[in-house]
Image (cartoon, rainbow, N blue to C red; front, side, top):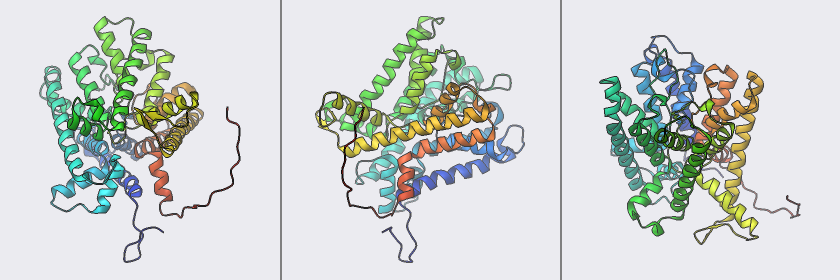
Length: 446
């Protein structure tokens, strides 16, 4: 039976609170971005464009229909970065933070919702973890801004302070929004800094730190260099993240950027390997990369970051569990395992379900956009992978898409951020579960 209050009203589950919280912030952000004060021209922004921008910001994606640097005013950009910060930390985490700062006691229900929102293993110590997340987030974003500030101030004067703060928050939250665009140079991302090691390395570090997850930070701070003491999840995340950065970077180095000097070529290969999971910045023209490299980037976008992080995607742990299960099957072993620890069957089932949902959303969305816009499917697959993985990379077609295609991308960004299973659990919350088991019969696989 669903939980009910004494008055007989049904309580919302933690999963329903999460999805409604994100939806509410997105709608409020869209209404504020529609105001004349939010655009540099002083005109009212159409609702569909404001909604697309707000969804992209809260879902920390980075796909845009208007150039952030030239279209939005300083107020509009401040609204966007606030939405990015809320989306990166999570709506529930931000709400609990305000409750804690106001001196109110965080209820058991709020703690349970926070546990689901940040993928914490247990409800105990959740308030301590919240304080750690807030302190760590603002400290890292401040350090990132201070490191980039001299470069931006050199190029843009005092405006460089705002640019350093904006890009530091955007990078840490894996959002991919930039404000470097001008009326004569729209949607540039970080292409003018392709040879700048300070901007490249700082942005990459912010992306990785934001994308490995709050619990992994906690493990690293508690156990430091004693890797053997880390939780199994932290070990899997760190190793998978390292391989997903290194291997694609080597491929990109040899298959792309041949015309660049050695240093720029290394930075470009590394940056384009880091950013698909799930940051959305680019320092080179993505359309000029080989088809094979674009296909690898699509896979990286779908994988995304890690659980309980600012990143989206189906998550590194999902990908790792699927690989471990495949290797166990190849070896005719009954159980998948990591570091001499068996993975429970329910985890493997969830991983397979999440991966299937992402692939269905990614392919169905691309097919619909291809039909609606008359565009090649390969280009549309790149955009929908970027949307459902909450990445923000684009081959340049998003600003030209029609209303139907924009709605498809909005839905994909939202589903990619709140998580497919979260949405299903919210929809089915409180329904009776049938514990009876049906008769079993075998079918042939493969």
